[in-house]
Amino acid sequence: MRVLRSIDELRSIRAHSIANAQKVGFVPTMGALHLGHAELMKVASDQSDISIASIFINPKQFNSASDLAKYPRTIDDDLAICSECKVDYVYLPEISDVYPEGFDTSITPGSLGSLFEGASRPGHFSGMATVVVKLFNIVQPNVAFFGKKDYQQLAIIRRFVADLNFPIQIFGMETVREVDGLALSSRNAQLTDEERKEAPRFFEILQAFNRSFSSTDSLNEAISDAKAQLLSLQCFQLDYFDIAEQDSLQPSRDTSKRLVALGAILGSQVRLIDNQELQ
Ligand code: PAF
Image (tube, rainbow, N blue to C red):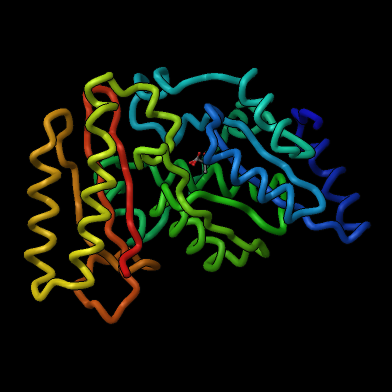
């Protein structure tokens, strides 16, 4: 595994891969890597001739300076995980390479970016989309891998890849969970002991909702029940819970469509998001 720090190094690897008709797989990350990232990297490494992960804590997608400061920084452990997952290259960009002086452009998702997380975290998806577009242009992968845990992020990336004609296949991978069901997240480390104990209830409630979704006569009642259960959590406040179409994320009650339940709950230091594709 080689660590790359400059855009020129990536360009020359890309030129070589094109000359040799090699497929490049890419896993962008912000570090604080966990088993969910490891799965993405293993699949990228298995399915590509050349696998590249990036680690870049993107300041533009944080809502406050304190949130950015709190984000875990674990670069030595991260590089060890990348190496175990057998990625070929890890790109560690300098902030001045990603956002050089005078940088004045941003990508703003349309309606997909204003709902759910977009409503709770103004500017987050614009920061995320801007950096992912930049990383796509720097790395120029054939395929990029993202987790379904960040369901709205994945939907937005699929949308701009189609809208802006990026020749990149986007691969969405199932959420990796703790044995008690809590979705793995770099931010779980910020849960208090009490919050960590109660956090698996979030996914239990989503799963129970999925079961009632397939059997209920009243979808609105099932949604109200799930909300009531989320509201009754002791350590968390409910931010949102709703069901929406899987691709557009427009809230919907049309059960003939492919739907997903999406929720967010707030702890003292950290908000958790999770989702469940409904069957
Ligand atoms: O999911 C993440 O870790 C980030 O949002 C991403 C896609 C690496 C962009 O900074």
